Image (tube, rainbow, N blue to C red; front, side):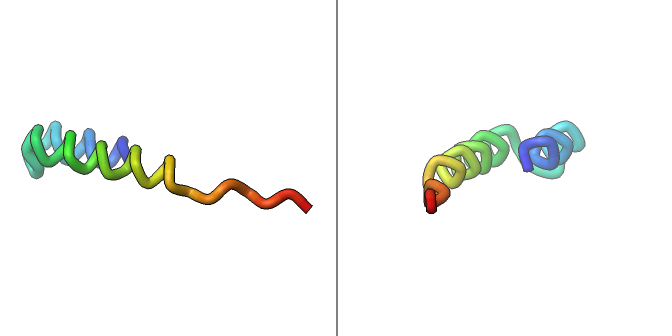
Length: 39
């Protein structure tokens, strides 16, 4: 995901602000993933 964002940023498809905003959302989503349940 972050590699895709970096590529888009380097090709000026998204702005640096969009890149950091999307990165922030991606980081938050990783934190919100539920812990795997132990059986």
